[in-house]
Amino acid sequence: MFRTTFIGMRLNTFTDYSLRVLMYLGTRTGRLATIGEIAVAHGISENHLMKVVQELSRCEYVETVRGRSGGMRLAKQPEDIVVGDVVRRTEADLALAECFTPTSLCRIQPACQLKGILEEALAAMFLVLDSYTLADLLIQPAAFPWLGGDYPVQPMRHEPKG
Image (cartoon, rainbow, N blue to C red; front, side, top):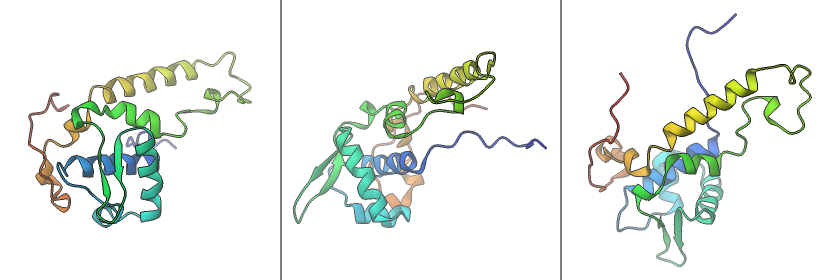
C-alpha cells in the first residue's frame, strides 16, 4: 500500500548537524562559540559535533581558535555560504537509488527510466538549495531564542511557497 502523505528525501544526520552548527555560529557575530554550548543548545552529543566541526573547518566554513579562550566562528560571511554547497560537501551519499552507484546490480537498469527521473529531481533540489545562503536561514533569529542570536534581521529574498 502506498503512503498518502509525502515524507520526502531525508538529509543525513551529519548534514543536519552541520547546518545547525552553521546557523548557531551565524547568530554569534563577534563572539566565539564552543562545541559544548552548541551541544546543549541543540541537544546533540559533543562527540558527534566534534566530527561535524572538524569537517566544517576542513571545508573552510568554520574557523577554530585554540586555547583556553578558544572556540569557533564562521570563516565566511553568512551570505557567502550557499546551502546547496554545504549539503553537497556533507552528504556522504547522494545516490537516490542503487542504479546511481557504480556497482549497481539492477537487472532492469539498461531499459529503466527511473535513474534519469531521479537525477532530474536531485538537480531540481540543488537548484533550490543553491538559491539560498546561510543568511537566508538567519533572517528571524528571535525564532531561535535558545540561540540568543544577534544577527540582523533581513528581508527574505524568496517569496514563501503557498
